[in-house]
Image (cartoon, rainbow, N blue to C red; front, side, top):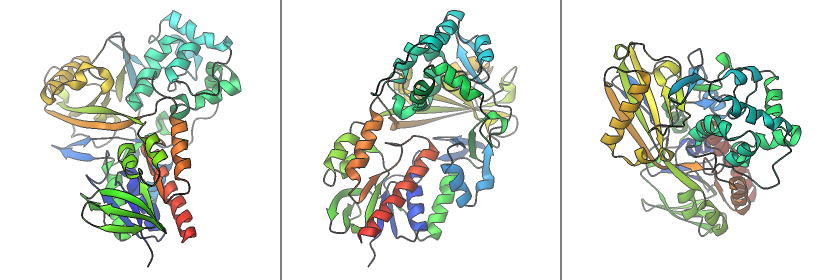
Length: 462
């Protein structure tokens, strides 16, 4: 009798891994202790589309687009509503993102020279990078530490921390160059100057298939549409996820692994894909791969909250435009950024309405520890003042994610390689955001890749 493969965790990574295995003809047992989709969840409230987790993915990493095509919903992948418009709020005023500004560096010198986001001394300090020697050695370094030495604290505070820190929910002083922005190492090695390298990059053709200058895409029915399509595809392949079931223990066996489930089931499986995050994966690896377990326990996680506010358009003297803004200091605020969801994506709000989403990660400080009502009051007051609302929102909705976002601190790449090496000759793989990328396409690609790798290895053994 052919042994099935076990996939632990039915977030987007686990669902993608199960899809890869089942689509290749393997039997799959998929268990999930909480809910299908993990942090991807779309909810409809009073006609508003509320994204609990990620609201989009980047098209230049093809994992999500390819999966949508494979599921027959490629036509429901939608770009942002044009024109793309993002602002930084600095010294209490809104400033447009300079044209050609990347995550941390300019690709065009003119808009960078004209922006009011930086002072002239800060701009001059940034271009001093043109004549600086190389800084990086063989060891990993924090993004903030490198950029302060090369382009100065102004670029770090006004661009790098809001943009990169906003994605990862952490300070660039904690985040790893090699895990988060490895291109900076390539830039310095090839061009010496990061600014020269970025300007050279800006002279190359823009990415193909990038309408309106934005790489971001979403699903017409919200990101939950991708999860629903995956679950339906798995059902057609004979995979019914066991929701509310967890794995109590894993142990090696002669031809794979032995798993004990919380519903009393004992399974003999050919291999296991762990897609439930670093802490739970570490617990399950204690017997099979104790070194990998110890390394996984070093992965730090952060918590975040998102506040959704819905207004009637006539609650503003001038309804807000653009796709949103990021807080770039120096004042401390209760949010790190705001997305105008109804302006950024089609079909997110009824006509005549404005849907706003504000982000409250741990690093905002005191606001992050407020209770639900106080947090909603604080965020609604701040966002309403910034956007010019004259009335309270008609809908307020709070989503909390506790210890949900892995933080790729200095040395993360080395830790990820250590886990991979420790598991190379075992029937287990650890997939997903814990190690190999936090974005939706990264998780999909990682889940499918490791599932295929494991199947090849274990079927070969059998």
